[in-house]
Length: 197
Image (cartoon, rainbow, N blue to C red; front, side, top):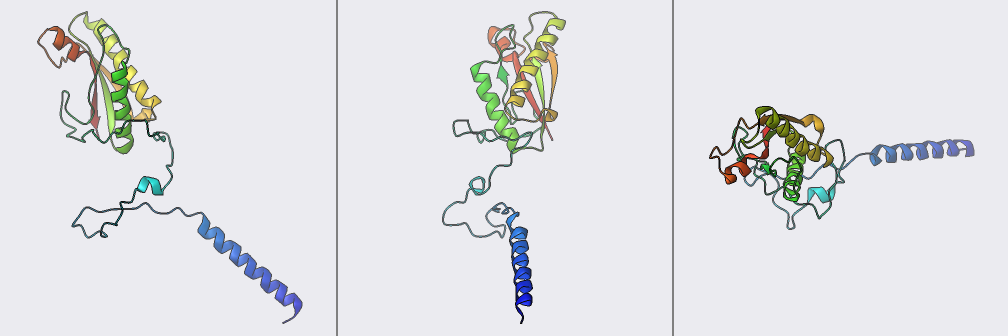
């Protein structure tokens, strides 16, 4: 084999090696899938595998990485989407009298809701604003809208996509507790999160 042929053969082999490495380098590893016991999946490993640790998080419009100091949404049950009142996967948040400002407790609840919503991307939420029975219908409709908007805006600031959320105000028309006492009024001043697929 002549010197020129050996150089060409070497060049072709080098090119083939570069193409083979480039073709393999861009692939991501598939996520680790685990089946429920008895479903014919692989036997459990000696040590649990954390899929989140195996793959980097792909951030997007409704996903952002959160630090260890954020609360976990695992304590929120998925529940029945047709339920009303305070039952369901997302708890109500309360407001002070004549206010649409989120309390620190309400912010913590909404932070858990944001984590839950990032894990359940198939659902959409209507944030309902509610008021107690005092005041005019018009005033309470406006205040209910402000309360619903405050909760929605905080969810969006936490990374939940705005197109999954909408608001509605019921004012004083749908009280959770119709008793007419201070305790009942406090329960009625709320934002309710109605979840739908």
